Length: 607
Image (cartoon, rainbow, N blue to C red; front, side):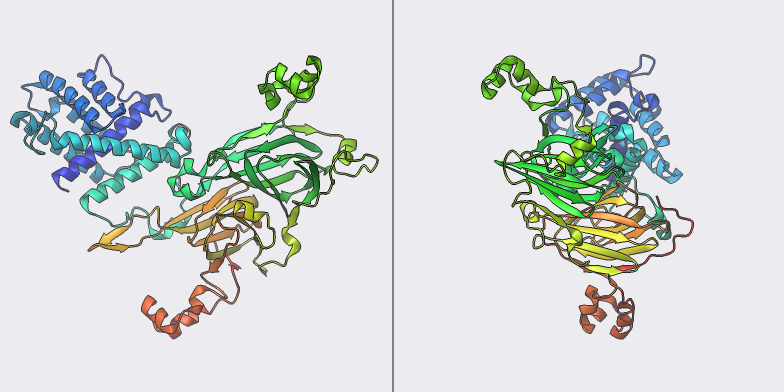
């Protein structure tokens, strides 16, 4: 490694640990106070000064000026001292080399050598008036510019690791993920600076499929559901914005995923979203009522039904079953601020839960044409059970579900003639065999899907079986596990380091993998080959929303009708380097489509 590369890498490491330790606590008092100024530590003011420069907002010029002021003060204190061991920055750098998490001895030695190189360069600058890394102008020179640029790079790196490990509190709630992310990015930075574009070989290839990836932005678990409404009668969980996790999801920033669960005999109070809602009934049965203009439409829903609630349309829901929980998997398409959602409710049993409460009582009196006492009834002063989810009686269920024939509807057609529901079981499955079943719905089947540009699929995989590998042509698939357990693997170019040889791009693909359990959400971008496996103990059911394409296509990479089976013999030979006859014997061997028996996973238990 050249001097410049070593200094950049060491400073990247040194500043990263400074920044993470002093300003973004990992939840440990020891780590949080690592660089806290202390009256007993020599030159603690110098550390505090450098930290201020790293933390300060502003551009390179401001950081450079701040850095120069710190150097000037320190040089005045250290003038005449030539030994590196008397330089607190040098000693601090070496100390940090000993603390690199997960580092082997050779990495620590390289780090210490970098500290020595940096100290030598610093001494040259001090003795030669700026000679060393380049001619100094105004006391800074290239070295200080590099420092400012590296500091900005570290801030970006920390921000990306925040997103990867769950939003702005990632390092506090998931310190192992955060540390792993920082270390991996520092190592990648070091390889780039030495010109080494080879992939790290720290883990044997055979172990890779079994590794749970902690910094995997494509997988969302329970703690990523950042917005919640929870009571004893039900819950609503909304997944964090996809773009809060990674910039890779900018193409789907307008969409959010959510689960709603209502206990038996539960009413969900009327509300509307500033978003289009597509919901799939994953379990149970009930009635959904939509108020649209001067009409009211009520639809009985059951497992396998899709329904669409347009943005701004007031809807209320009831679980009519006496025993089963009603479970909805939802995708929401925001119509105001991309990815930001607001739920508007007329009440939940108290004044704070009604948007009527935002208006003055005088406005409500005038708008309703009633006296003040009557107007107060509209802001939730009634004594009811609190919350969006409310327990109901058998009589109320019969009335709300339309079973009570003695009551008439005050306006409109009760069943409506417009928007409705669509059962995914209305058509034959797209693919079905003993290893699994695929149901698909697009805008030709259910025109409402065109409004939000989404296609739908339900994948049921038999225990011990798998779907794929396959890829989607247009849609970014959001897979929501509604039942069972298993795992998935995906080929991803975004997380792999793309090497170059002689100016030519050499594609690289990193395996993204994770276990799957009920409630897990996985994002599969368009074009990315993927495999989904069910565990040996239970079937796996996955709800799929295809975003940005209401008529998605998918192509199998193995089995019957796979894309290789359509290639000409010459194309196969030129691509793989073997005779076409040998390749065809492999390509044509599997006669099933999409669903196959999964490989044996001895010693590996699924969630």
